[in-house]
Image (cartoon, rainbow, N blue to C red):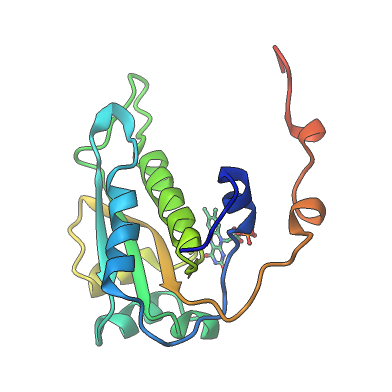
Length: 177
Ligand SMILES: Cc1cc2nc3c(=O)[nH]c(=O)nc-3n(C[C@H](O)[C@H](O)[C@H](O)COP(=O)(O)O)c2cc1C
């Protein structure tokens, strides 16, 4: 477990890891990350998610087929976070909150992983139809994000929050837009 002064420090230290050590991740660490996802808040507490933990062949190669990038291949674990559109909360105007719920769970998990010294990267640019077919995902479920999980071999750019993020003055409005 890495030691962070506070949440801001942890959040600043998370980054998209795109180089992984192939060594396996301890089961207790995988379970810790899953538990943090489990307790995430969701609209109307409907928890419209299933988390597929992909560690073994041939399923690893199936995930790689759906997102074919060299850096992605070495991650020892893939967490495929799926939303159940049959149970997700829909607002009166029909807006489905499944994406929001899954994003919260995923964000919890990426930060928990960072606290454990593990790396993750949000991956949404995969082939959803192929992934559904290969992992036998039921039709009412949608794979929202894949989180590769493992020990990082790269490091975050130290000044990225200054150079690659908008400044508060450009994004915050007070009282009205
Ligand atoms: C919703 C979402 C989808 C993303 N999809 C991908 C992806 O498919 N492939 C990838 O390499 N990075 C992906 N990323 C990572 C972003 O590029 C990255 O978070 C952003 O550039 C900020 O960098 P940082 O995570 O290192 O702070 C995604 C991030 C988010 C939040």
